Each structure stands twice: as C-alpha cells, then as structure tokens.
Length: 383
Image (cartoon, rainbow, N blue to C red; front, side):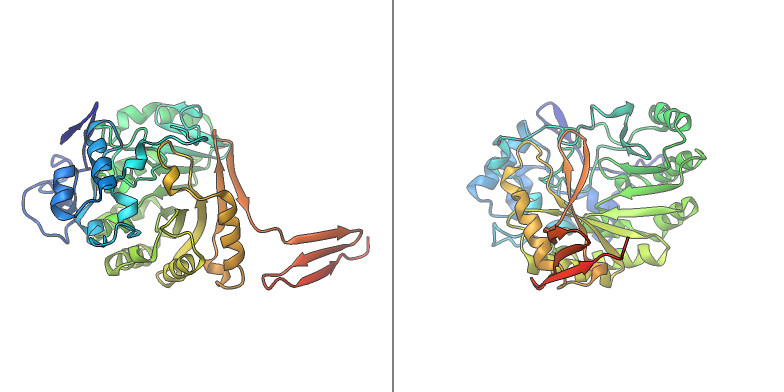
C-alpha cells in the first residue's frame, strides 16, 4: 500500500484468512489475484511502462499527493495504446492535469448520496430500491468515477457487523424490493465475503432482486470464475450491471466473462457512460452496443456523465447525447438501444431524454417525426 496524501492507494486483495492460498505469491496473468497484486498504483510504475505526456505526468503526481488514487490492472493496461494519448482506454484510466480543474456545476457528491443515506453504507433515492455500498475498492479507478470522493480511501470491504444497521433498516422497510450492491466494486472482494453478504441480504424477506454493480467484466474479466459463479448462483435472482464504454474493451477475455455470466443464468445489463473524446460518436456507440448483444449483454443505459468535481474535460453537453440517440434510432436494433439517462444532480432521480418525436398536436391527431425525418400523422380512435 502507498500513502496518497491523507489516503491509502490500495487495490483490493482477498483476505488469505477467508480464502486460503488466495494471496500467496506466484500465479499468472490469467489469475485475478495476480492481476490485483501487479496493478499499477503509482506514477513511477506507470512511467516505467508508458511515455507520459506532460499532462499525464502532472495528473499521476497529483494522484499521489492529493488526488483520486491510481490503479490499473495489467489486463486493462494491455488495452492501452502506448503511442496515442487519445487512446479511449488510456483516457479512462490514466490521470491528467485537468483533474485539478473545477468547472461550474461540478459537485463532490453529484448524486446527493450522502444526503440520502438512511443508514451507514445504505442510500435510498427511490421508494422501492436502495444502494448498498459494500466496499471502497475497485480493480481500476476510472477517472470519471462518480464516487471519487470515497473510493480507494483505504477502508476496504465493509464487514457484516458494520452493515447490520443497514440490514435492520431494510427489515423495517419492506417497501424496498431491490438492493443494488455497489461501492467500489463488490466483485473485487473475496468470494466468501461476497457469498456471506448476499446470504445476509437474502435473509430479508421483502428483498426480491439483487443487482451487482460491477466493472470487473471489463477491467478484471478473469475474476468471473466457476468458483465465483457457484457462490453467486444460490442467491438468484441476481442481475449483473456492468459498464462497458468502448468497443476496445470487448476483448476476448471480456467477451468470455460475459458469456460465462449469461450461461450461469445471470442477466447482464450494461450502463455506458457518455465520455468526451472516447465514445461520443454514433459509429463507436453502435459498434459497442452491437458487440454487447452478441455476448448476451443488454445495453441498458447510456448515461450522461455525472458532474463530478474535476471531470469536466470528459463530459459532453447534454444536447450531444440527445443528438446521438437520434442518430442511433432506427440504425441499431431495438434490443441494442439503451435509454439515454441524466441522473439529476442532488439525487433527484434519473430522467430519460430523447429527440423530440412529437412535432404537432391537434384534437385527435398527433404529428410524429420518424427516424428518417418523415412526418406522419397518428389519428386517435373516436372518443
């Protein structure tokens, strides 16, 4: 572990007490524990593997002193183009100087999660669902992270004892039927710990579905092992919510991880974050969404990037997402078309956005614009 200002730059590593042999030396790049042990977590290591631009060097130095920590698995780093500072993978994981900038509208906690905390580690922003923050660790610290205020702060996985008030709150509120387990990344925890957590949630009768919010299929695909799937399966229905942002991330290992999840009975949904200079064009998004459905991953949301402090260099105007949805409509099959969503600042909830399809209305007749730009009247039935 390295000291990062007042935080510890740490990557998740399973507890050898929980999983005998897991943290022993050795292993190979195909082993997820090996990947975590060999993650890039400091500027010197990053610079030994990559010729940094001046901006990247400043960003990496800042991450060691006062900024959001750095961690990149060898797998994810293997997708980086070492010769292109504009590489879509590089832009997602390598810090830059612009992270020190603050723009109008930037927020430390853009979704108001701290204001909506109903119990320690438990956030409620909707009547029927909650967010359980089970860990602060991720395999890779994405530079656009909504929770950069808290992830990687050295706390690690939250114990079941510390989560007891959250479980008690859930028992007292049976109207909550859906628990989203996030963090950090819950699948970066040790398998026995994940299994115990899910078992504890399943003991609450009113909880119908569990969602695992994870970027592990993208950043650490070898984590999706037979052992993990066997540990998760008894707690169905579990939905896996993952985060592919660019076609380059759909490498052979990631595709195989998605197929393993689907074959094991886990519905997999994807939430793509719209990122400037990375995926903010229709061709890139179409390729990504088609690639996802080929491995049985349903594009669920295209998310307007949250206004996290220090990320304005990666955000697009809201109008760009609406424009892209118009370009994709009719061009990409319906099962590959996500909703474009803005999660409103302050925790007020998600708002779906789309190009205006209603051109005019008069009694009994609505004029619609098709994806080809044609105007068509729809006539209502007689009253």
